[in-house]
Image 1 (tube, rainbow, N blue to C red):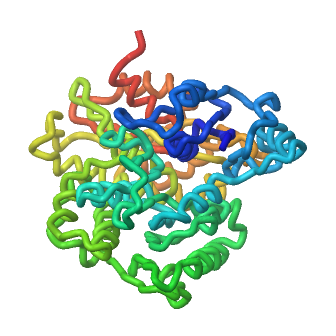
Image 2 (cartoon, helix red, strand yellow):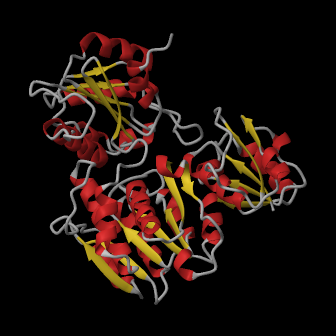
Length: 464
């Protein structure tokens, strides 16, 4: 098959591209921004020929010239299908040529058909839990395919490819994140599902709020086969009533009873609950307690999930992908926990008791920031100094009223909570401010679903 992926630079689409290439398909793609050529993990030999792999084409920007008659299908993200999407002309041409248009989630659902699908969903913790399950199965001698929403260093990227396309069912697991945006999780066909949490999120696609979200997840639960498995967070009041719709076995996990023997390297209660969920799934699949415990206790996390970026002049820099109020609260709590519980094995200098927690946050999407405004205002308790940059506006998904400097309004509201907050529009200016004010012993946390991590990287390694 010859596939063209619109938005190939996205973390999920690039992983899908690697998977398709490994299966022998020809792949091309385009993205608004520059992106690295999609490479398979080191040592992995694709089923495709060297010629096909070397002719992988990735284009910057959208152009109808990318859509050619020899394509079998055009793969798009849910966002690309919006009426204001920059990819509209490419999609229009594909329709004119009679080329099949498939969303990313539907294609992944199709790829699950001959595998044992494990889908991890919910508003928070999908990437961490997916990675944990993948690592446990790998350690237990299985050979899973794993698509994850971040880079995992030990896998050399955002996908773990099987060493072969195993026929044995024990090697045939396909572990993926099932995103709730635009109800994409309904396109998946897993045998096993994990629901971590449900709350108000992506309200631009769930106008009825939590009621709409609960209805969508009830449909998701009904998709599970009778011989399947549903693993749920029993502490979440939005999830538990939905389990009555399940035709399959239901197993619960709770933060009140973490998996026995866990002593995680990654701080925070949110990581402990994700680990407990992963442990519950793998236990049900027959993995031993010792393998589960040892794998999780040695888990160091995926990129941008409380990632220790480095230390310079006594200032520690940590980065996290959190962009929802609940995620911010959990990450700030973890950062403060880290300050008082620096691991003895860490190469970084211990943080002093008088250290400050400095948070640099970039809001992701105007609509999310506006609809969850009051929740964002209350998310930064425990922060000594807060800097907020311009809102990251998403092409094709924002209303006409959207403005990047809406962050000013957020800063002013946060100040009423007694928090020292400042609006600084650009990354460069933020770096300048941090160089002037950060002192030895301080911890800087960059947080957001954007490229805000570049602030920390520039602070640690200044450009010549």
